[in-house]
Amino acid sequence: MGGENTEASGAIIDSHIHVIPPARTASLVRWIKRAFPEHPSREEITPEEMLAELRACGVVRAFNFVFPLKEEETASLNAFSRDIALRFPMLVPFGSMHVESPRKAEVAEYCLTELGLAGIKIHPYAQRFEVFCREFEPLFETLSRFGRPFVVHTGFDDFYNRTQDLDYLRSILDRYPEMPVVLVHSLFPRFGLALELLRLHPKVYLDMTNVPSSIRLYQRAPELFAGQQDATGLDGEAENFERLLSEWHQRIMFGTDHPVGMGSPEQIFTDLDSFEMTADARSNILYATATRFLHDECGID
Image 1 (cartoon, helix red, strand yellow):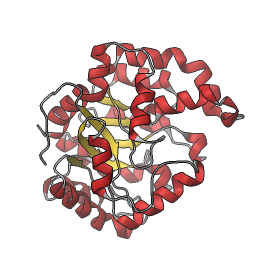
Image 2 (cartoon, rainbow, N blue to C red):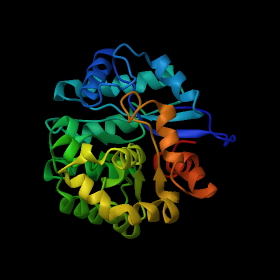
Image 3 (cartoon, rainbow, N blue to C red):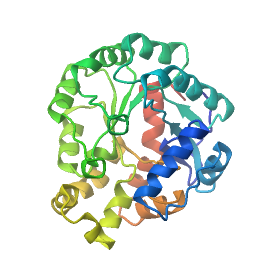
Image 4 (cartoon, rainbow, N blue to C red):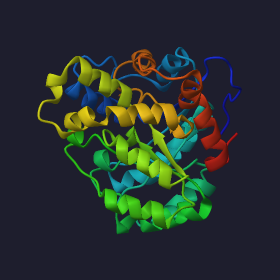
């Protein structure tokens, strides 16, 4: 799938958005407004409007993620991901599947070879199942064989009131070293663990989506996090977060989660820029890391 890839001044690759069917978009916006009633998104927002808002911020390309809430949605959503990227070439389409999907290896191979999707994204908290488990071994084996990425939601346990088997994640990274893995939300707030996994596994990448805005929200209104382990973690993880930005920016990407991120795209990029970082770090996080990732791990120029 095409898209502008010249490194123009200020160009951004958004590593995390959701252009999905209208009914699912409306449901997603209703969900985020329950958590944040003042959120600026609208249930009827169109793909054209979403992408125009991103372009206004300098975004020239965006990773588009779908995820089935029911197994029977899997095939149609994967086809939608392919079709919407043909309609809007700035999108990089990813596929997905459900824990109840039969023949997971075949589904993954079909996504990669027949539909031309870049990789597989799973959101186990929204989909309400564990992904670091034996049931998904056929997926990991297939992605490893093709050398294509497994993109997975991690962290924000308090927000979703769910947990993940991080020991099983470690075993996956050990057993499938040829499979690129993107840890979406960077294990928030377990930045020390994120640092460890980056050191140990050269094909691990971090997606910092929603992380800077969440830290800023905590700094402005800590009472909103009262009693949450995420807040306790942030108090002890500030130095590790700074180390990620300063030492590991060549393996970090950043996205808006549009249309359901932590505010408007403009606000989200402003939140990122409020943290001190070098020009090289900012360039990598907003553009260059994603460019290398697409070339090296997805076969996309």
